[in-house]
Length: 118
Image (cartoon, rainbow, N blue to C red; front, side, top):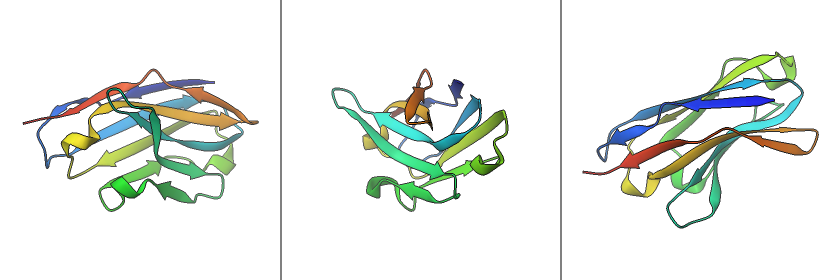
């Protein structure tokens, strides 16, 4: 299993960014994104499961949208998940990690930095 995240950057408050994560492998239970703000633990931002249900952290509901190119249940060997982030605030600053859960084991991408600052 390999995950490669991209799309971070420095943006002003109120603007948008789109993160993408290329995931190799299959048989995933969950794919999603975590945020690690400076000096804080890693927290869940959004996830999608094999039933295509999507969950969001309360702090991003209505602003962030998680999407995927293939249903997890199709077990494609290559998958891409994206996180469209709108209305960014300084509190969204942090390193964003994509992750995949397969057979109760979690795999992480390398992280991509998002900085929201005026």
